[in-house]
Image (tube, helix red, strand yellow):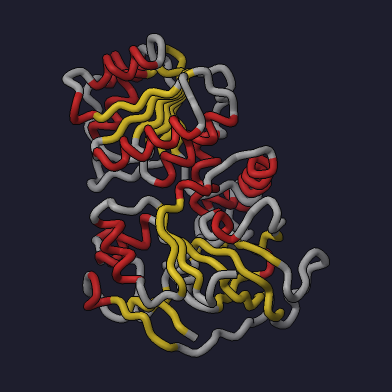
Length: 360
C-alpha cells in the first residue's frame, strides 16, 4: 500500500517519504480498516517539520496521521463486536488507553497515564489501510457524516470537548485563534445558541476565512477582530461581546492570547484552554486582577472524553452542525503530501483532506 512515512529524524522532504509499504495485519483484538479519507492535524505538521515537541516522541520509521474514516476490511482474532461488521463505515479514537490506571478506572480515559497515540507512538492512518483496536472503532452514518467530514472527526472531537465544558447558550463567547479547531469551535458556539461571538487571530488569511464563515451564515452577532489592526485588543473584544466574555475558548496557545483571554473574561467566566504554548512556561501578566479576583474557572483540555465526546459530536452533526466549509483543499491519493504541507505552512489552506484509495 501507499503510505506517508517519517523515515528519518529530519524536517520536511528529507525526513518524510510517500512510499510503498506492506499492508498491516490485524492482530488480536484489532480491526483492519480501508482508509477512505484522512486529514492533516497540527501535530502532523510538527512531525513533518520535526519540531522538538515531536522529535522526542516519534521514532522513525513511522506512518503518521491520526484523523480518518474508512470501511472495515477484516477482524483479527477475538476482535468481533456485535455492532461491527465487514464493510461498515467507521472512524476510530486514535488514543489507545490502558484501561487499568487510576484515570481509566474513574471514567477519565482521555487522561490515561499510559496513552499510546496511533500515528505518533505507533503507525497511523496516512495510508491506504490502518489497524486499530476494535474497542476504539466508532460506527458512522454516511448520511450524517460524509467522508469529507469523517476525515477529521478526531479534531472536531477536540473542538467539542473544548466547547462543552460550559453551557454556551445565551452566552458571550470569545474564540481566540481561528485555525481549523477555532473554526469548529465558532460553529459549535453558533449551533449552541451563543448570543455573541468574537473571533480573534493575528493572520489576515484566518480573519478573512472567519468573515466568510459569518457572512455565509448571515450571522449579525459575530465579530472578527484582526489583532494586528487594533491598538486595544482587549477593549475591542470586550466591546464586541457587550462588556466581556462569559466563556473564553483559547485555541492558539500563544502567551499573548492566553493573557487576552484572562483580560476579556467577565467575573465568574469559564476559560477553556486547548492551545499548547511553544515554551514550557507562560507568564500571566496580572494573576491577581485577571484571574483570582475574577473568580475564573479554567479547564485544561486534552483529546476527547472517551467516548462521551464522540457521542456528543455525532449528535451535534445530526442536529445540523456544519463544518464542511473548513475543508479548503482535497487530494486524490497521498502523492501530493509535500505540496499539501507547503499550503498549510503558507496558511493558504485551512483543513486538507486526502483520499488514499481515490474519492469514495
